[in-house]
Amino acid sequence: MSKLFLIATMLMLSVTLSQAAPDKAEIIKELMNTMETCKGEAGASDTDIDEMIKQVAASSKEGKCLRVCLMKKYGVVDNNGKFVKSVAMKQAQEYLGDEADKLKVTEKIIDACANIAVPDNHCEAAEVYGKCFMEQGKAHGMEKFTF
Image (cartoon, rainbow, N blue to C red; front, side, top):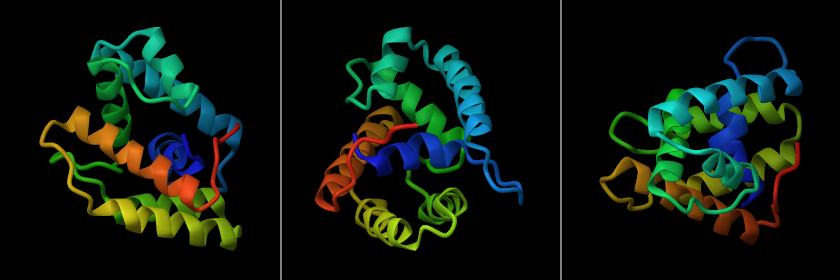
């Protein structure tokens, strides 16, 4: 998956909205706690979490629902299953800080994926958004994200 996919669905989601600069270890800890909560809510398995960490497409309905759960918990997807561009951009700005070049590319990717047609099923929609982020990330030279 592209760096943006994780920024949009995991890291951006895990950036708290506090005024303090994000502490990456704290972000990862919060993300893992939220992922465990979503794992229970979605009925997901360790394999589903593994796929997300390995940055591959979800192979199960529960894996897709795990992803939308995370996106919703952090406000990047609304209750109607639609991507919220303004929240994604705010979190990207907080996470990337003064990395203007990366932020510019991230904005292009978010713009490209923000209004795409997605299924009514929120779990399926999350997977479509993820695919868009992966494709756009690759097109803009952003590869897999490493912590």
